[in-house]
Length: 300
Ligand SMILES: [Zn+2]
Figure 1 (tube, helix red, strand yellow):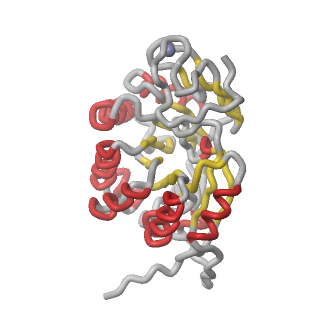
Figure 2 (figure 1 turned 135 degrees about the vertical axis):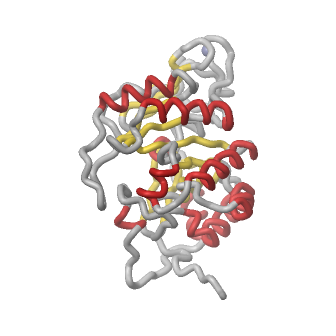
């Protein structure tokens, strides 16, 4: 049997985005990343927030780009650090992602994958060779949720997260909070403990607000629910954020040691402050950002 990638070079979305939009808050904060995605997914989440491109495939698939073209565009884009594979599930775009990322790395660009993390050990090992930073969904912390709402299993996702953390590549996690489905306090406590114990206390966790979409019409997540879970997760992890919300709380980064505010975020406006050239807190010298480029926007 031969498997052929029908979406090689086929784009569903293509845009220069703030890196914060991926979301990645600890990977070259304040910079942009050229983002590209195609069609299709290996999950069937009935709450998919991107179902127009993940669960619907156009009848005619026309390649619009090549690895060389996309890298050329990335090199000339403003304040751009590299290329992000995102929007739909990049794991099923493997051959294009690999080829584009390889050319990008040769040109000194950074590469990002935003994924559901549902991938076998061997292909993930290969992906880790050419991707620098990951944002992986951990959609809930129980397998019933995965089975019923995504058509997948949690175990490969948990194993993938461990594999990435062990590799030393940059990792952030997103959990979309859906009322009545995964907003249980005990489950959030278990999830945060697991992240701290298995992946690292410093791995950022983004709690994202759900909106009714695709086959699910539960009401949008309330700010109150997000605040509640944010508080629980923040008790176990250094960097917890709230996303997809109009509230400005839960967006800023504080030094994990002395609490100095080192970044404020409002919409996609990112302000870096109290940081030295290496991404260290000027209050106490603790390294806050391992991946950091000093820019004139830093205020001390
Ligand atoms: Zn500090």
